[in-house]
Length: 334
Image 1 (cartoon, rainbow, N blue to C red):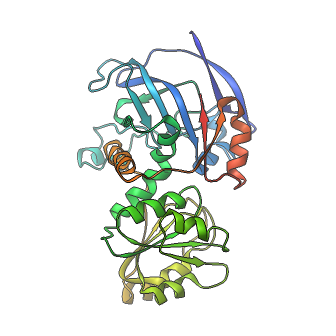
Image 2: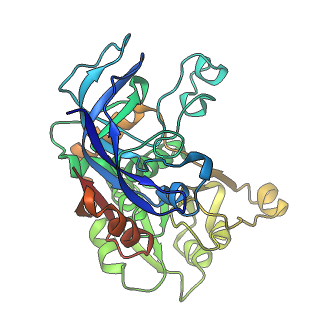
Image 3: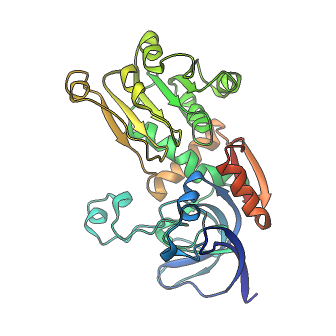
């Protein structure tokens, strides 16, 4: 095999099939034969709109595959080992944030599928520091969406320091939110699911939600007050005004934003000072933290609801996802 197939972003922002030359991994990198790659809403940042300077880029950052070649200096990994790659493409280990142990903030870290080629492909190269060991209990299709969508919500909950029994809300019951509800419930939290309309109420309760708020029919902040105020709200939807959620926070509580959107969050100095509310974002985490996420998912039975498409149908699968028609993650199989 001297070449491999990819789906890349064309200059006009469309997705097109292409063929790449097979190369040996460079020092500190590995080469993977891709088995599955999830489609994430963040992939749209590489596709539509896209940066012409980054084309032809291969999207995809929920990658599961098997190592088939090691670059010079790679230790701790072996050919034939099943691994994953998430959004953060591996820390450098020498910049100031890395020296301080803050690998997420590495100033020389590639973003998989955005600044380096991703997993809409038969083959991918990656830094060894990005690799996540995949438990045997997870199939490639099960593992792929947990590497980003699952990990994002899992780590957001951990960073918020929610304690068992706390009231925690998950806003948006979609690709991230349906996993966030599961993680929160399995962590022993009292879970409120928030979505527009009542269509997802039964599913949210099936996934572990104890309460449901229809944000189209009522003010979600007021409803959270009625339930006793939330210690944490995880905002997963990639659009819409989430500012009303601040009114439902307890003193010292956090609104953690994980749904990437251009919509501003409106908070007043009075809320920050007298209500002591906090607004923050959460960007994924380190590879070893992602392994903890996968182990938790295995032990507690957390799984994404997925649809699968072959790599050759990546364009249709991407359009299906970006149109909001997926329930709830789409995974490309190779």
